Amino acid sequence: AEAALYRRTLRLSVSVAAQLAGLKRPLRGGHCVGEGYYYKVQGDVLSSEQVKQVADKLEDLVKSGDAISRVKKPWKEAAAYFDAHGLVCSKALISTRVELEVSCYECRGVLRLAIHPVHERVSALKAGKYALLHAAPGLIASYAKDAYVPQPALVASHTDHLVFAESHGVDSVGSLNALQQVGRGRKDFVLNCEFRQEAKLGNIATEVKKRFDGGHPVKVICIAGPTSSGKTTFANKLCMYLSNLGFVAKPLTVDHYYLPLDRQPRYQKRQQRSDVDYDHIESMDVELVGKHLNELAAGRSVMTPVYNMKTGYRDGAGHQFDALPANGVLVIEGIHALNPLYTQAVEASKVYKIFISPLTVLQLDEANAVKTTDHRLLRRMCRDYLFRGNSASMTLRMWDNVRKGEGVWIFPHQNNADFVMNSAAEYEVPVLKTFIEPLLRAVTPEDPNYAKACDMLQLLEHFSTWPPGLAPASALLREFTGDGAFDCH
Image (cartoon, rainbow, N blue to C red):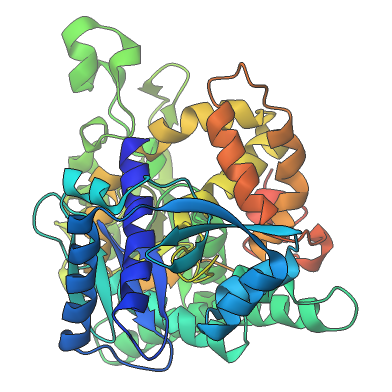
């Protein structure tokens, strides 16, 4: 909680410092890229000198210990301020979620929407380490304790997606809310979101075909991403796109490659199955995975294991997996799919790696964006309730543990991917709100997860509600809401 408060204060303070530094246009961002936040000026490129000016102003705010005061402003006064300072995202949000008075933070005469709780003074940033780094066309506000690790893959994906959002005039929650149910506004935007994702799938399939025609065929496609990224639907769609180009695409489930219980390192210490961490790479039979991938890539058949999660052991002799034909491509997805240990036995030119995650570009206001982790949590909460019977509280209780392995096993490998698949469709949160809001309202104050439930309700409060029927049957969102063309629930 303290770390989150620090990061929220940093985002607000950077936004305030940018306005005080006199940039010609407002700084906009707050998108998480590793241990930092990405910002840019719409329609302009920040110079290193401008980044230094913002950094100097931020340092001045921290040293002076300026207060961050929570104030209420009449709607008309807040709207006039946002108009006067070009704060388009803030104006759009309060214009689509109108209240008599608008909650704001005021710091050295600068107003920003009170989106999240923050520290009472900017000087609270002294407790940690922060830095503003030039990352053309924008900047990174780093909160890394050690040296910031650049995230070129995420920044490139964000920049690409932002072009799409700006071309449709929907780059903030307020502009999304402004799309009307009557007429074609919402329908056309949903379709454009889907066409964009389909185009990305087509691009990947075309790249695989290009390598094949060039005499360097891809034999293994590895897909990894954090929970609720849409890996399953994406993999199914990709197989179909590949088949349309003449390939025989076959999925291989690596979930069956867990080590038998008596070979699990943590089980061997105390003979307690609860000690086994099934997210840890040590729980996988990495040697067998590598061996089978190499044999299949070389055109040989294998006997894949069938793992019984109830017993912790493999059933029988396994499953016959026929050899890939000359035009065959193996598609694997899972938490460790990008780990080089999996594919080290396969010739590098035969492997194509894809990182997938919903990297939304929607701004709440100029200082804050919709968090990717919140987007995934909403997806997960919906799926857990509809198909597993889990309450919102149960999903919230498991969430931190579910995410625990992501920073260790997935994110370190994302910059080594051949393709970053942004699975975000910006219309998803208004649709998910229909399912999730009643569930969160049922979390009681006595529940340990009540505070997190309130945070998610506050996020949903910024969005209008859209009917689930707007999502096409082939939409990746249907993996979480059901009634989809790829539904396996």
